[in-house]
Image 1 (cartoon, rainbow, N blue to C red):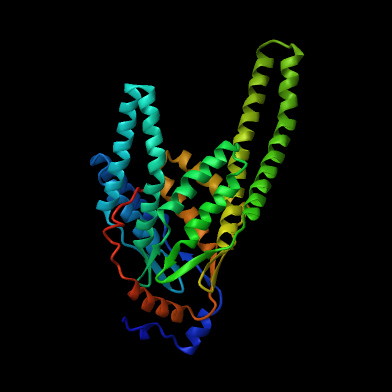
Image 2 (spheres, rainbow, N blue to C red):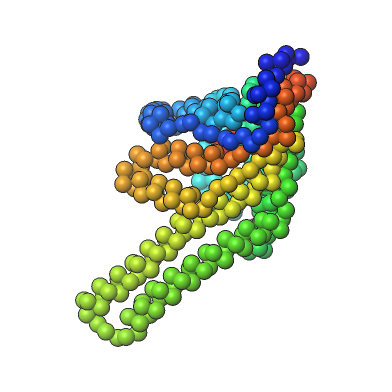
Length: 362
């Protein structure tokens, strides 16, 4: 059994760790740009083969710069396992294109085969991702069954589709409940308490906000466009005015879409993490829509103005805000909890390594 004495804090440290513990992200755009540009160039030179190693480098950087209680996370993924997943994806794409050229029926059968194999592939990827993540030397894990994966990733999405997405909040809640409740840290399982009603409330709030903005834009621009079309005025000036009005209308819709989707992302992240626990410990997310929207719009402008070179900086900005909006509320000393969890984890064994040696690279 592992000696846990290294986790026993002094009285002062213990008092500090019983209060809220904010997550922090220490990565910088300049550091990540160097990783990103090398990954991109080597992936191009090797015709995509290096992309598996690029993903590992990227995840190691993001994990290593995410800290809570003065300790960072670690990623242990094997690039070869990720490469397997990418080969599977390429084979499926090639097979589909060949089937499409052969006949429509064969292509349809191929699509059905991919749809029915997707839950298994995602299930394996979840196992791989969590098993290869750790905190203070203790691995995460995923216990969800393949039967549950088919319910979450096949049955509920089909239900959502045939109900014209009226069941989408229900499917979303079941998905997050599966992912969170079946995940564990060492021998301690996560919990998830958000209800279906809470998801419907978020979706309805998002739809109401989107509809209000869409209606306002239509009122502001639609009347002008309609008046120009029905007035019967002809000429270059009228045509230019109509074209400008249509452009302004479309541009306003695009801007509104960029503003409204951060609202949904903020509502969902706060809902999910404010209802997630680890044993007796609880998480809190305090993302603000205004800040997320500002980051999203300025990131898009930066990427456009730099022809894509701002992308790594944009990723760092968004990741930093998401991580630092998170807080852990421990029920007691986090050091004692980690020490006890480490002792439990030693008894669970690591015999599943070979079974988890696969990643779809989602």
